Length: 311
Ligand code: BDR
Ligand code: CA
Image 1: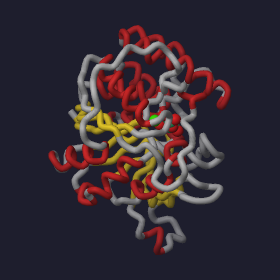
Image 2: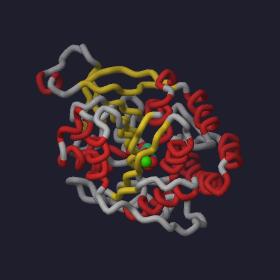
Image 3: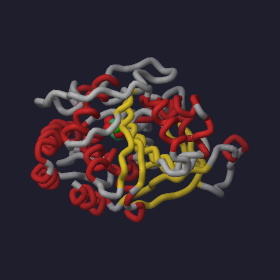
Image 4: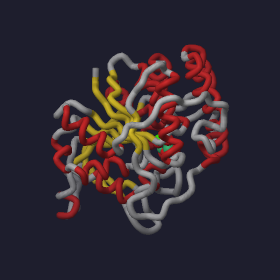
């Protein structure tokens, strides 16, 4: 199985991705690290513990970033994921406690304990990975890969016309993480907007997952309203699950290598900028930015089938 740390801000689509990480026989979930983003970080931690308990597993949860590195913190978007991050539904009590170490320390310790083995999958703002890099820059050479749900190459944004939410919420952390020089794949809106989980697919998941399925289905109902209003579709884009779909089934995605960065200031703040390898006009600043892999497209129906089958 592929050992991963899942860095997350649950969040409705995060919750589904966590359920996948817990359920998939070829994923070894070493820990959940939490960040502010869809909710405040304390709520993210609560939800991470809850989801693991609902799946009958006790996965270590380490709490991390409460705010962006540089830009002022904005309130969490309660109209998208609910004030509780899970669509304002009835939630059972949580019994577990988070780890006594920070998310960044947990990442560093776990990567260093298994050099070359651990994949970091990050589906929220990137402060925890940035803090881990600062604690121990050597992890760049010891992670197996970094997979990020974030950004948008040609698709445009989902929080401003050009910026995707995870990178917009902490663009300075995003820039550090995307240019750190570790093996990195970006699964952004170009791929995730091709995938629409409709109510019928959600019913199949709910039926198979017991109490966890009820939580996923009820939170989905709330999240769906946002998609109807914002994109006019009947269903949700399972953004964060797509990062795991890429990890397990990369053949379902179209990718390209190139130099990748994030705009940190001004009207394009949070926008991902990408120069395909070998393109003309690669200036020195661009050529010294390490190469990364970005997703440009996905086989949406096949990704949805993979999600439903996994759950
Ligand atoms: C990303 O933003 C968050 O709201 C979702 O959980 C996902 O990680 C999509 O842009
Ligand atoms: Ca997320």
